[in-house]
Image 1 (cartoon, rainbow, N blue to C red):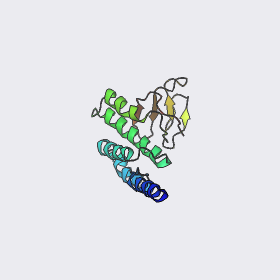
Image 2: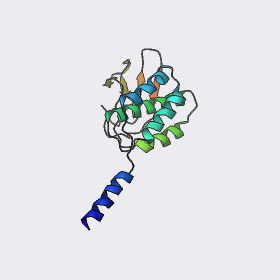
Image 3: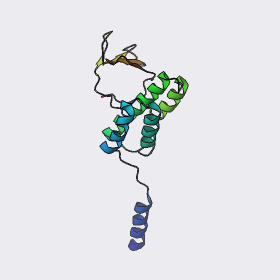
Image 4: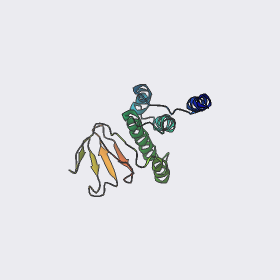
Length: 148
Protein backbone atom coordinates (compact mmCIF):
# COMPACT_ATOMS: atom_id res chain seq x y z
CA UNK A 1 0.00 0.00 0.00
CA UNK A 2 2.84 2.40 0.84
CA UNK A 3 4.46 1.71 -2.54
CA UNK A 4 1.21 2.41 -4.43
CA UNK A 5 0.70 5.64 -2.50
CA UNK A 6 4.31 6.70 -3.19
CA UNK A 7 3.93 5.97 -6.90
CA UNK A 8 0.71 8.00 -7.08
CA UNK A 9 2.35 10.95 -5.31
CA UNK A 10 5.40 10.84 -7.60
CA UNK A 11 3.19 10.61 -10.68
CA UNK A 12 1.17 13.63 -9.60
CA UNK A 13 4.35 15.59 -8.95
CA UNK A 14 5.61 14.92 -12.46
CA UNK A 15 2.25 15.63 -14.08
CA UNK A 16 1.75 19.00 -12.44
CA UNK A 17 2.66 21.85 -14.72
CA UNK A 18 5.22 24.36 -13.61
CA UNK A 19 4.66 28.01 -14.35
CA UNK A 20 7.55 29.88 -15.88
CA UNK A 21 9.78 31.94 -13.61
CA UNK A 22 10.80 35.13 -15.36
CA UNK A 23 14.43 36.19 -15.54
CA UNK A 24 16.63 39.06 -16.61
CA UNK A 25 16.92 37.38 -20.03
CA UNK A 26 13.15 37.69 -20.49
CA UNK A 27 13.22 41.36 -19.51
CA UNK A 28 16.23 42.02 -21.78
CA UNK A 29 14.17 41.03 -24.83
CA UNK A 30 11.73 43.88 -24.11
CA UNK A 31 14.36 46.63 -23.84
CA UNK A 32 14.92 47.19 -27.60
CA UNK A 33 11.15 47.36 -28.17
CA UNK A 34 10.72 49.90 -25.38
CA UNK A 35 13.69 51.97 -26.59
CA UNK A 36 12.20 52.13 -30.10
CA UNK A 37 8.80 52.91 -28.57
CA UNK A 38 7.40 49.90 -30.41
CA UNK A 39 4.49 49.85 -27.99
CA UNK A 40 2.39 47.18 -29.72
CA UNK A 41 5.17 44.56 -29.86
CA UNK A 42 6.41 45.42 -26.36
CA UNK A 43 2.86 45.04 -25.06
CA UNK A 44 2.32 41.72 -26.85
CA UNK A 45 5.65 40.27 -25.70
CA UNK A 46 5.23 41.41 -22.10
CA UNK A 47 1.65 40.09 -22.05
CA UNK A 48 2.86 36.65 -23.20
CA UNK A 49 5.48 36.62 -20.45
CA UNK A 50 2.96 37.64 -17.80
CA UNK A 51 0.45 35.00 -18.90
CA UNK A 52 3.13 32.29 -18.80
CA UNK A 53 4.18 33.23 -15.25
CA UNK A 54 0.98 33.72 -13.26
CA UNK A 55 2.39 32.20 -10.06
CA UNK A 56 5.81 33.87 -10.29
CA UNK A 57 6.38 36.39 -7.50
CA UNK A 58 9.85 37.50 -8.60
CA UNK A 59 10.94 41.10 -9.04
CA UNK A 60 11.44 40.42 -12.75
CA UNK A 61 7.74 39.73 -13.15
CA UNK A 62 6.96 42.99 -11.33
CA UNK A 63 9.32 44.85 -13.70
CA UNK A 64 7.78 43.19 -16.76
CA UNK A 65 4.34 44.18 -15.47
CA UNK A 66 5.54 47.80 -15.43
CA UNK A 67 6.78 47.39 -19.03
CA UNK A 68 3.36 46.01 -19.95
CA UNK A 69 1.61 49.02 -18.42
CA UNK A 70 4.05 51.46 -20.04
CA UNK A 71 3.50 49.81 -23.43
CA UNK A 72 -0.26 49.91 -23.04
CA UNK A 73 -0.08 53.60 -22.06
CA UNK A 74 2.04 54.24 -25.16
CA UNK A 75 -0.60 52.52 -27.28
CA UNK A 76 -3.28 54.74 -25.71
CA UNK A 77 -1.30 57.89 -26.58
CA UNK A 78 -1.03 56.65 -30.19
CA UNK A 79 -4.77 55.86 -30.28
CA UNK A 80 -4.13 52.16 -30.93
CA UNK A 81 -5.76 51.19 -27.62
CA UNK A 82 -8.73 52.83 -25.90
CA UNK A 83 -8.93 53.82 -22.24
CA UNK A 84 -11.63 51.17 -21.80
CA UNK A 85 -9.34 48.49 -23.28
CA UNK A 86 -6.37 49.45 -21.11
CA UNK A 87 -8.53 49.42 -18.00
CA UNK A 88 -9.91 45.97 -18.91
CA UNK A 89 -6.41 44.62 -19.60
CA UNK A 90 -4.92 46.04 -16.40
CA UNK A 91 -7.69 44.71 -14.16
CA UNK A 92 -6.20 41.23 -14.72
CA UNK A 93 -3.23 42.33 -12.63
CA UNK A 94 -5.13 43.95 -9.77
CA UNK A 95 -3.33 43.48 -6.46
CA UNK A 96 -0.07 42.30 -8.01
CA UNK A 97 3.36 43.74 -7.27
CA UNK A 98 4.75 46.28 -9.73
CA UNK A 99 8.22 47.82 -9.78
CA UNK A 100 8.38 51.22 -11.43
CA UNK A 101 11.41 52.42 -13.32
CA UNK A 102 13.69 54.56 -11.19
CA UNK A 103 11.40 57.59 -11.08
CA UNK A 104 10.88 59.07 -7.64
CA UNK A 105 7.32 59.85 -6.54
CA UNK A 106 6.55 63.50 -5.77
CA UNK A 107 3.70 65.87 -4.95
CA UNK A 108 5.49 68.91 -6.45
CA UNK A 109 4.09 70.31 -9.67
CA UNK A 110 6.43 70.71 -12.62
CA UNK A 111 8.83 67.98 -11.52
CA UNK A 112 10.65 66.18 -14.31
CA UNK A 113 11.24 62.42 -14.41
CA UNK A 114 9.06 61.95 -11.34
CA UNK A 115 5.76 60.16 -10.86
CA UNK A 116 3.23 62.78 -9.82
CA UNK A 117 -0.22 61.70 -8.68
CA UNK A 118 -3.10 63.95 -9.76
CA UNK A 119 -4.56 63.61 -6.26
CA UNK A 120 -1.93 62.33 -3.80
CA UNK A 121 -4.60 61.32 -1.29
CA UNK A 122 -6.32 58.99 -3.77
CA UNK A 123 -3.32 57.87 -5.84
CA UNK A 124 -5.88 57.10 -8.57
CA UNK A 125 -4.13 58.60 -11.58
CA UNK A 126 -0.60 59.79 -12.21
CA UNK A 127 1.74 61.05 -14.88
CA UNK A 128 5.45 61.29 -15.58
CA UNK A 129 6.89 64.28 -17.40
CA UNK A 130 10.07 63.01 -18.99
CA UNK A 131 13.02 65.16 -20.02
CA UNK A 132 12.77 63.86 -23.58
CA UNK A 133 9.57 65.88 -24.02
CA UNK A 134 7.14 62.98 -23.79
CA UNK A 135 4.45 62.58 -21.15
CA UNK A 136 2.93 59.16 -20.60
CA UNK A 137 -0.30 59.44 -18.66
CA UNK A 138 -1.13 56.63 -16.29
CA UNK A 139 -4.76 55.64 -16.59
CA UNK A 140 -4.79 53.39 -13.58
CA UNK A 141 -7.08 53.06 -10.66
CA UNK A 142 -5.29 52.00 -7.52
CA UNK A 143 -4.81 48.39 -8.64
CA UNK A 144 -1.53 47.28 -7.23
CA UNK A 145 -0.58 45.99 -3.82
CA UNK A 146 2.84 47.60 -3.63
CA UNK A 147 4.79 50.22 -5.51
CA UNK A 148 8.56 50.27 -5.10
